[in-house]
Amino acid sequence: MNTASSTQTTLTLFGGVACVLIVASAIGALLKWRVAKGLPNAVIDNLNSRVNAWWVMVAVIGLAFAFGKGGVIVLFYLISFYALREFISLAYTRRGDHHAIALAFFVALPVQYFLIWIDWYGLYEIFIPVYAFLVLPILAAMGGDTRRFLERTSKIQWGLMVCVFCISHVPALLTLPIPGFEDRNLLLIAFLVIVVQGSDVLQYVWGKLFGKRKVAPELSPSKTWEGLIGGVASATALGAALSWATPFTPWQAALMALTICVMGFFGGLVMSAIKRDRGVKDWGTMIEGHGGMLDRLDSVIFAAPIYFHVLRYWWVP
Image 1 (spheres, helix red, strand yellow):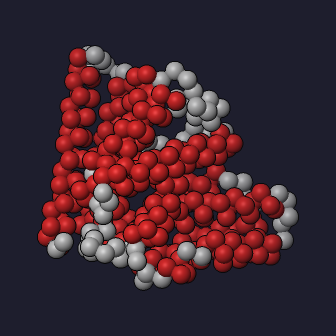
Image 2 (image 1 turned 120 degrees about the vertical axis):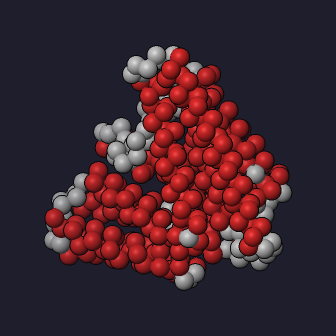
Image 3 (image 1 turned 45 degrees about the horizontal axis):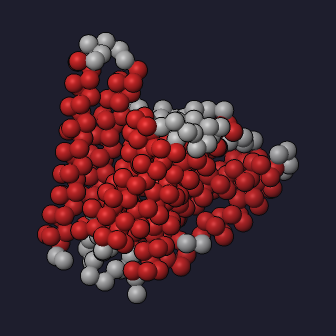
């Protein structure tokens, strides 16, 4: 497929997302006028703030897509930076950890994204899990502070893993040489984001409409079995419907969507468990209606590496 056709497909996808947001904005405005009578209403105001935040996020992603590979890598580099900052800000650290934290932010993070830029798969897949994991505790030990050493070191390692290593697999999708899909790898990212984020939204909607039985009340009281099953099933159907923009057949797209939705759900549970451990509701307040960067990306964190490797081992010769 030529570049012009690829651009047209991408524009079609963004046009579809824009139409959905226009409808959501209209519904939110109607509810504010007819139900809330223009007065403050917690549920309706939260809905409208979420829709407004989605407009901003879609615009930012669209701008990054317009700049191609470089724009996408810069965008996700910044996302990883702010996500790591949120994670470390909630972790217990001491003065002896400063060198390890500096290494995470100013060496491991940029090097990981540089390796993706130059498409060095053999190194960006082991750079953080092997080299950074070994160097970080060495630096922390050299600080001479042994109080809660294992806890402190593992938190920095875990933060680097989820905020940099896992998230970096989204722009790494641009490096996959899939036969017959040249110059269209941006659509792989679009599929991942639309399906996983769509699953989150659909789980919320199904849960609000029919949810009764909690999945994990101690971790995430708002998640119900009805919401989970309805949301994942709907997002799987959405993935199958988007097969025309991917290298997948409809049944392959459905299976891929099911896989990343399930991983996304478990990612949300794990990140919720960390928040509960730290005694906070949200990772931050960066995105109105969505909390912090990690609140919006918790499902993508677990879905992206699995999605990347399934593609690499089954679609790349």
